[in-house]
Image 1 (tube, rainbow, N blue to C red):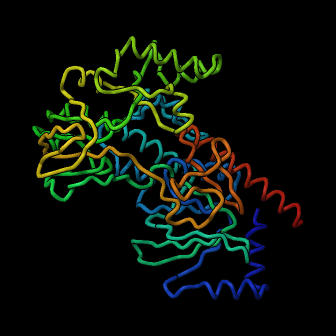
Image 2: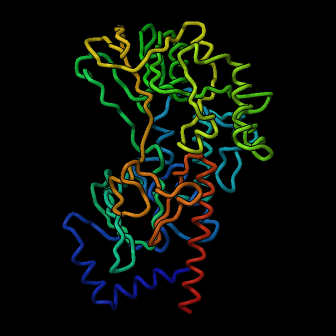
Image 3: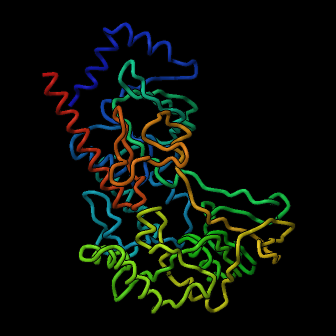
Length: 423
């Protein structure tokens, strides 16, 4: 299992080209260099934890670098208080560990965080926190990845050298903040959902929520429950489905139906039942896309909204639906239909994006446009020169778990092959 580290140590001791290359590339700001025996995993969210656990099961050591001070930092630091898993817990389990039996079907934010912390503890996963990877690049001269990581707490830069690099920074690494004309003129609170915790702050105020995905819908409901007056900007068509159908979770029912029927037929079934349960959402200003919810998810990754009560508030007039924003003025929003309305605050439920293009220097695996693997699922988990991706499938935690298992299997095969070759 330690063949690769012996190879690096041999090069370090006996290969003049290796020694010269390493010396020439050591910057004055680098405080140390670490040769990693196994893979380096960038990111300690659910995907990174899953990859580490799968490696641990095969006795393959790894180093996890995490820019924040905790595991699952998105969940711990950037989510609102009322958040729950949108899917039943059995569809959100990481490899080798189930949720506690006393957890509800849809665990709360706090329960999911506890599950992830217990998961890390169970597998002995100890990330190196406050480590922001600023640059990662494959060095063909030594056959290794070189990562430059800055520790914000210790104020030092370390270079990590490894044979395998696992990118686990995920689909939601950075908040997407749209450019809206007049932002500086507005004068009220403008906040991304990553900084929103509870509607208590907005009690008695008029708030405009921009974005009609699951987060936008839930934030509107949370504002209603705290006696605020929310309006919802709907910029695109959206599929709204009940969270449960026929006594089962909509997601679970869909997965079961797909075992027996073609996708198009399942989509038609979902839309018919949704119409019977929710009515015609287009009459509420929520036009449905031309493609069915499952087909759209497969083609674009766009997830349907699973309604948890927001639609009833829209029907009751407690939440107003508005078109896209044209511009902002002092405490005023001007919409594209010419209407203007006063608001005390704006919440941007405009989603997140990958940050991979900012730090990973490679040309073949990840798109420079959106930071996702260019090969579609299920082939996007493996690149060249020992580069892997986990958690970029647009298929939630199930997709991440599948990636993690494949990566661990592949690295194990590589080690076994090298050990055999080197023996």
